[in-house]
Image (cartoon, rainbow over all chains, first blue to last red; front, side, top):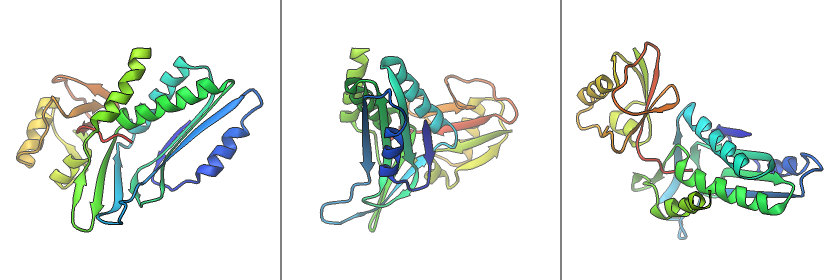
Length: 151
Length: 77
């Protein structure tokens, strides 16, 4: 399941729902990405994520499909916000349920690497003094490449 | 007429995010956009074009009511 919208969400409730999904799963792995503030509170006040109205959710749904082809998974939940996000707020939730924990761990790791590099979002940091669009990070691309080597 | 969506910094540079533009091809759309916003960075090497949610390369024809998106390099999620 993939949800991309501007609404805040409660990661704990999503994890609870995922764990209650069925007795066939032996493990549930989850990740919550938060909006990170600056250590001294300077500059970054709002993170703005832009998303395409239809293509972004389609691209992320394709990532879920790829994860399901690679690993035997029971349930996948991806929730991603766009719009204005404040420091400390949850931006993304990825949860994976599988019969065995190894598949759940690897699939969740894979999905986060894909989201960080291939998800159609455009981030702008809006601070008191400046606003800047963020470029893709080379180190994230390098991390994502390792999955191609394992394919 | 195509429904055009600009993403990220392109929307900021243009001053708008969604607009209907009359053009018969992707190249025609690029020309119309750069005429409207001189210097708008729509290089084919860096800006991905999607037509009806499908990544599209080259100068393809655009049908009436097609939805075309111009996507600069993604920040990721």
